Image 1 (cartoon, protein in one colour):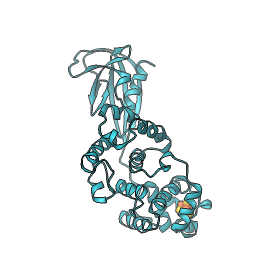
Image 2 (cartoon, rainbow, N blue to C red):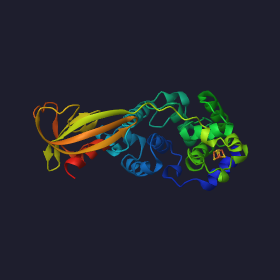
Image 3 (cartoon, rainbow, N blue to C red):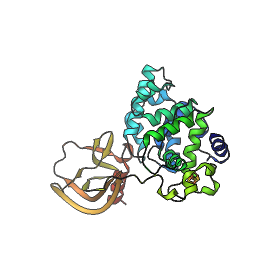
Image 4 (tube, protein in one colour):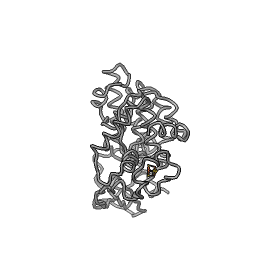
Length: 308
Ligand code: SF4
């Protein structure tokens, strides 16, 4: 099975910048960015990030606002904070080299079983498994698992990674899931694993893997106050990112409603009514040049409503 899979991968893989090197630092950055984020979204961020921080040493001494600024728009900012913390730890404890040892990797901030497996297999070609959403879908269909079975999934991925080229097998599984064995319309007729796929043979692709139960959407309504001119605004820093004053209820002050926007973070659906005006109580806020501080996509959307 791995032979056909790897042959298919070598012929059909997308040309992605992080596939042009096995440098552990580059592999690590790409894998962190690709968590919860589409490839097309990651491409420009990956290029900008590595241009600014071409080495782990450069990231280890970076200022947090600069790193968060380069991350702005990618979301899940804890990923960037963990990257910085891990880079500092690697610089301090591992001589600036990404560890090639599972126990050392898993001890780093933000590195879990998936990330350790991705770094060890892709960068170091070591036989460690990885299971992401794509791998879960491909393996569940091949083995015909109609029930959720994480243990069997990791065991199967572990067996497959025991090949001569774990880096190719693991990347091939992910690539197959991303480009052929898609959730809604798998292209079984061009799949290299068609001959051994239980879901294909039984026509159960639409029932495998079982749908994951998503948490119910939580709706949040907020008011944002945009106060400022000429690019400078009253803002406050929350977890390294600067944001406009945000409230559940309109606070004291003189405001005009200027627009509204929506934003989704995981299962939170956020509706923001945007006001321009002057906040009566300004303690805890500072005047900031909007373009010179790291902000989230939501904050950028809010400013777009106040000054389109
Ligand atoms: S044959 Fe179809 S369902 Fe099976 S792994 Fe290939 S694309 Fe997925």
